[in-house]
Image (cartoon, rainbow, N blue to C red; front, top):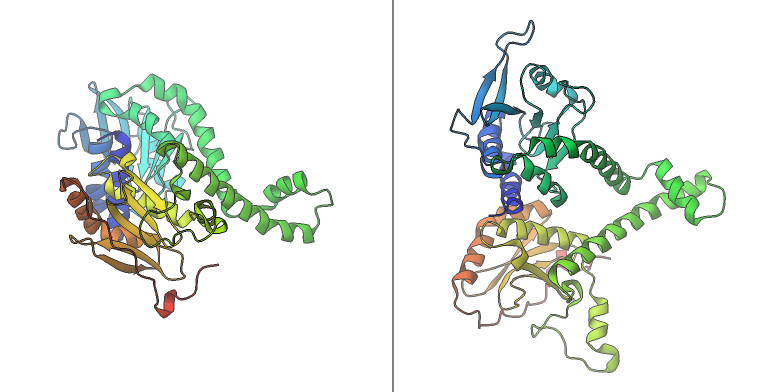
Length: 387
């Protein structure tokens, strides 16, 4: 598996299991050790490569331990301090890392709760760990642009000089991206003022601020949605899955020029929730197939997730165009079972069924039998379409 595939597979495991992990020790066993092993490529059971409970005397602090010391070419290069999954990573949590950093040869320190990994170095002062990380990997929202930098930290391609030289840019780019992300979610007054004064000629009064704050938030969400669609369109080729008419029998035939395929395509709008759900299913699938083989094809009734862009190889369906959302799963006879979900995280509860469907599709010599059309949803909870 490629590095991104391994990261996404671990991210799927964390999302699926983190609610059942009660302690820091369980976090290390379930998430941190697999990260060191499958992502960074070090043998966690070889004390020559990974030293657990590493001890070094630091000033008046004697016998203090750090969770892991990773050794490369006989020299300690990376220190890892762990907290329980779900715990926030605060500056005080890095105090042991800070002390150990100055008495070892390590130039990289990692603070993690198994889901978020903060990477530190000594950009501000030599041999003194920075107070802010230069790289933050969040497995709940993996940023693919960080994978090449993570690759430099792995055993087979460890390149300390390249890591340190790019750390300065990464540190500030990451912080800027996190600021932008927070402003897109909950815009602050300065951000609203900046954008409002670019499009509105009047004075920025209290009334104008109240009027434009929700507009800035809405415009930001739409912009991100459009960017995701553009990226997916580029990645999947010239044909846009988000506007591709579904060829299954349930779509009505064109009755007039006004109701032709172009009009049907124009009425289809893939929502941000559908895109997020698609990426969750893709993350689940990446342990069995390359992610590029998992695509989506949207229609007016549902969004289908397909293997190899083949509507006869349906992995799942997203019925998200109603107030009650459903995940459509398929058995060996291609019979759909709709499972009501209240949050996207619940998709991970059906990992086994999704993977079984993929295995059946991979084992089948030809997927020559069409899937049945989806029956209309008629239950009371789903009767009202989402506005």
